[in-house]
Length: 214
Ligand code: SF4
Image (cartoon, rainbow, N blue to C red):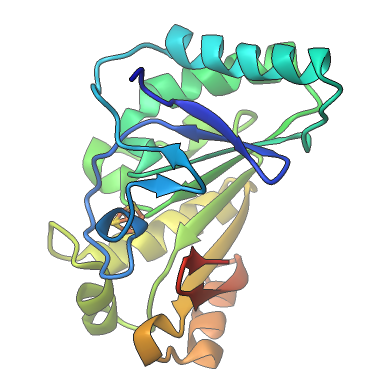
């Protein structure tokens, strides 16, 4: 089956750019499921172009118009992996969408490791392309972060916090999130919210539910 790079769910459109990630979160959906509500998100190949993504996006929009379906004016980069690892493709697709569908807001759900991975601050490159970053803060300190997110490099928690700050410094809207209630585990919500606010971001709690999280 062909790669599902773009899919729709509950009236929203999502982009699935990679199955790779620099974390291995204990609550990652990839560990438990092959699909999200019927969409197979394991890619057959990581070898594709921005044009492939744009082609699938346009097909969804075309089908929607032909069938009288309307989607929220938002596109979300997330899926089974860390979308910022495909930075060049993400930028190209976002630029196309901004030029072709200027009313569409672009959100990126990320683990916040991109500046570490690319060895530069990539956030300014996304100004005007990304409307909102949702960054997984995932804990109140590096010990908790390492336990829950199992990052593949040291110092990841500090990198996440620096990334969140870089977004707010660049005046791009940013939300820090935590997953609460995974298999009975509890996060110090108040402390995490304080950290998020101190970095200039909003805060969101994602409640764990057996089929995933909200
Ligand atoms: S950051 Fe996201 S994609 Fe990566 S392991 Fe964690 S939940 Fe999965």
